[in-house]
Image 1 (cartoon, one colour):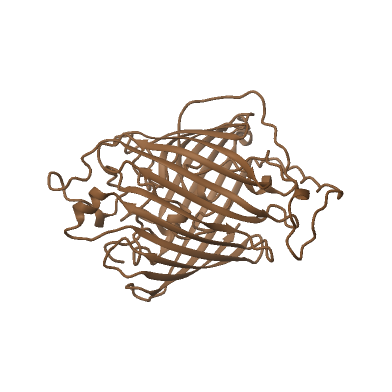
Image 2: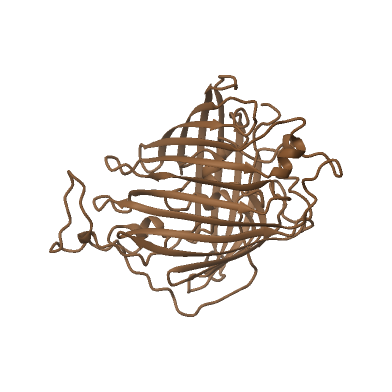
Length: 453
């Protein structure tokens, strides 16, 4: 790996407030006949967007049918409601393991195949298991990685989300948190949380390193405000067609830390967001606005890649400002849902973020694309998206004497062939115009074999 190498730019504004709100009336959800509620019904928290709730309803009789499919007419019997989900388990354990092979095939990087892997465990223990309240859940989240990837060989942003971590860090980490859920659906989670879990539960995107897009710029969009693993509190409050979030977190990376070592010594990070669930043309969508920031009085030393470290002041000017602030806009809109394959379809994804710059090392970023399930094999998945990231001008100027950098942009396409519910094989290709100015545009092809237990 070179000096610009792997495990780079991280972040996704995340996590939130320690205010405890309770709502007495349980949320009333309507069942959507197209299965939109089934694929979007989740309690995950996210800085960029949020899940669609179950109160979206689609009338297939009003939708045109594609050629070659059976149309749904007005006088047909309504689709049968999906059976009630089974009650949550007192103890729920899930393991996901992936193996990766990738190789650069164009550009300056050596055309060498590299092998790596990752295993994640997800253990949830409800309070009822040990005689406590059933709406209290303990979450234990181990992760382990091995091998080498092409991260850093072409782009500054890692091309393999599953294998990115802080420079010089080891391969194992453990996160733990406690979540309390009120009857209204409001939740409060406190502890050490891995942000990758959030992106994997988002509609349309659904990428966490094991599934979906592989490049970090799409799977876990960096904000340069917070790391991917952090300690804090997250409050989520659903209200009608809206979901509100207020988060507080330690802006220092908590990877391979217990969460107590830094103790908010660099300041306090925060996020406030509001998201609305909508329907356009009968299809569900979610649109989110968020404000994220921190009280840092210097740039994020533990996040910024060493190759981009600016000279100290007064020689350098980057990092002489205090406080971070950024705004995020995101949209996730389904274009088509298949009546013959409940909960399957495809849609568009789009995101834009702009920050005030110094001391945040990314001043703007964004992506747009499409992702979903092919109709001829709805159990499979595909995706195609473009992304772009811009380094803050002050940082670019400070390091120009030793390293020329510019915007990084790229395109990723993937296709997942799902053998069964447990095993899937993904092929992907990434074309990246690197932020490192002297590098040629590079192309990487990769394969991923994922198993769930």
